[in-house]
Length: 100
Image 1 (cartoon, helix red, strand yellow):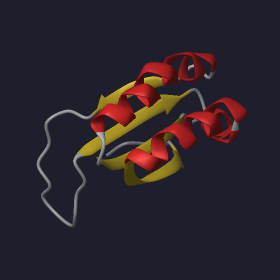
Image 2 (cartoon, rainbow, N blue to C red; image 1 turned 45 degrees about the horizontal axis):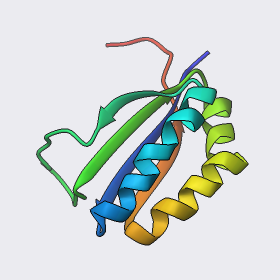
Image 3 (cartoon, rainbow, N blue to C red; image 1 turned 180 degrees about the vertical axis):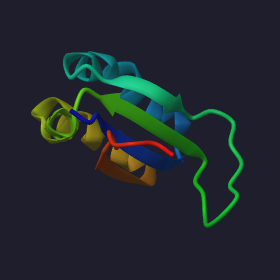
């Protein structure tokens, strides 16, 4: 079964306010088996537009990725995060087929 991913790009406008979201998200992500693959590391934007932070989180499957986002626990965290920045987040199913 293909894995599920959150792919997020964020601009944080209030780092101090955002710290609470970071401090409290661990138990929620742990509950859903989330694994950070990218967490705001160094990057170069080669095409299109960018934001200051890029995050990729892996889940065991697409349904689990959706369940985490839609959970009451994460919705509470979202309310904490949203006032301190803006961004884009997609939830996407991984590819499990043949490779070139």
